[in-house]
Image (tube, one colour):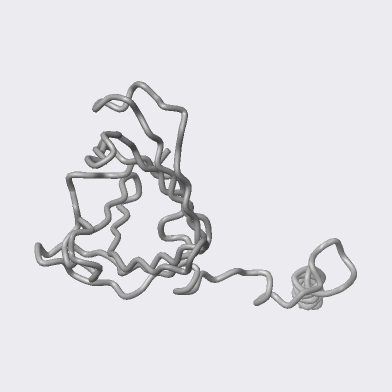
Length: 166
């Protein structure tokens, strides 16, 4: 019978010896060592990465062609237009246009075709111009709206121009 008490005491001592003390573990409370993602963390990383457009776009008044790369990184964005001499975007002009700024993700919306997307506001650093659009991230493809609403936020995504994750 006395052996059982020693065994129970030894188990309790073993279990509690790992708690506290000056061992090699962290002395911080457990709740500060575990990072729980919040809604704002999801918002700020929703589009993180660099995304290349699948379409070679014609800038008709200037007879130029370009592709667009969007890079998003924790609330900041860069949009790069790379210009080309041909409509297939293969002969580079070695010129580009870069715009950068900040972005914020808004509410989840349902487009007129029933697809889920998020509102996103892009604020350009150079002049503070605001572009309100919608965005959808499938994990490997990014879609924006069609941008043809006279400055108003569209309620439909443009699936003809997808952005692939680089």
